[in-house]
Image (cartoon, rainbow, N blue to C red; front, side, top):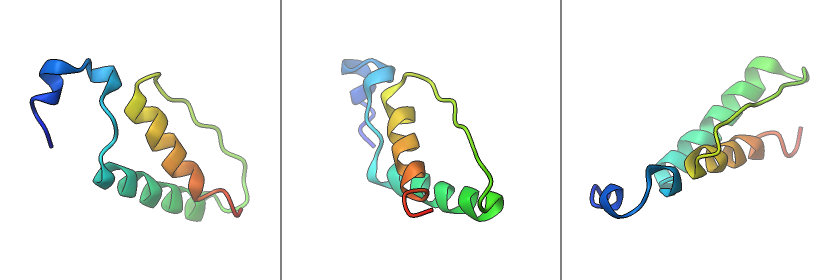
Length: 64
């Protein structure tokens, strides 16, 4: 993690790391397992990382 990034870039514009993306995808898989074929809605902040996390989570739902 580049701690200097926070000094040069606003927190809301710092991208998700590869590890964070993997964690988001894993969370999506777990959510899908828990809810099965039920519907689900997600709310997220406008921060770049949260939007990228949602994309990773939604990948688990692509084939559902």
